[in-house]
Length: 266
Image (cartoon, rainbow, N blue to C red):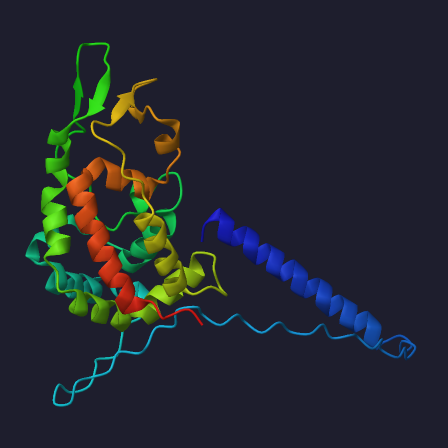
């Protein structure tokens, strides 16, 4: 038993002793005067908001048998990884995180509208190669190099080559675990699918600047010279770094995916 456990045990024993002493003393003195309990006004319980885009449960095609019960969230990595590899292909396997795959997927989606996405919560690893810029000289001006777009080609090809109906079915299949992870992320009354649709809309609103895109290097890292571009979210900047052609293809996929997971406005 370490010191922490001993401290907790001592505290527990002291609390128990104090409670026992209080009960012993109370039981052997005059009974307390009967004071009517005040009537508490019960505040009305607010009904949880209905989801804007409810997720329909995945139905089994006749003849295909029953769906296997989902594992607990903390035991879902293998199942979710296999499902993603089935959708995107075996090339994805080496890029996937080793643990907490659904948690990291949900956290990454939630963070795409923020300034940056922390690397430790990403469900996939870093791309190979370094960020590439073109420059007229050692001191600039600097531009986002078209050669940099090639770094994203394998990932974009993987995404655009996926069967979207199968992807949507996988999403619906694992949605209960995603909703659980979303609640644990700090949204106990929220709906992950509503958040996912909002993030898709946010990414679709990414501007399409004219080429070449100018950069500055105020410190070690490069930034967009245009303050409006630099103020974009991490997800929108990712689309810009992919290049206009790749970004357009990803937007097409996002638009198609949105039609599969979003319900019409009520």
